[in-house]
Image (cartoon, rainbow, N blue to C red; front, side):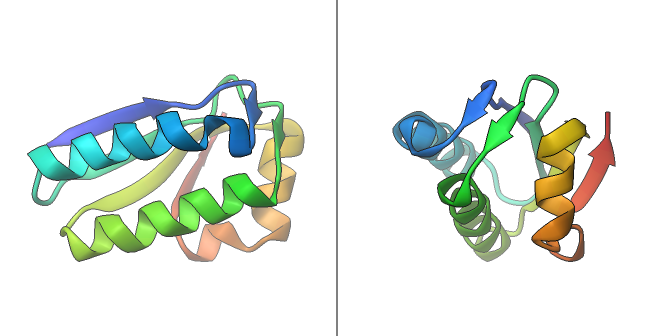
Length: 94
């Protein structure tokens, strides 16, 4: 089953609790499938956000799920590319 998490304009530690709750709920209810992170609104992300995506990827993989980032653009896309996230998850540019 495919699920989407909408990421806010500012993706930083302040979104940690909500992000973790959302993906834990998805992982509890689904074995296998795809989790899409909707980056269409993201203008800013920091190292905490990158860490949250890495943790999601690890937990999803253990649950038989895959993770992708959709609609990444601008500075957010540049940060993802500089951090080599395109080698870890599929990034669909916006």
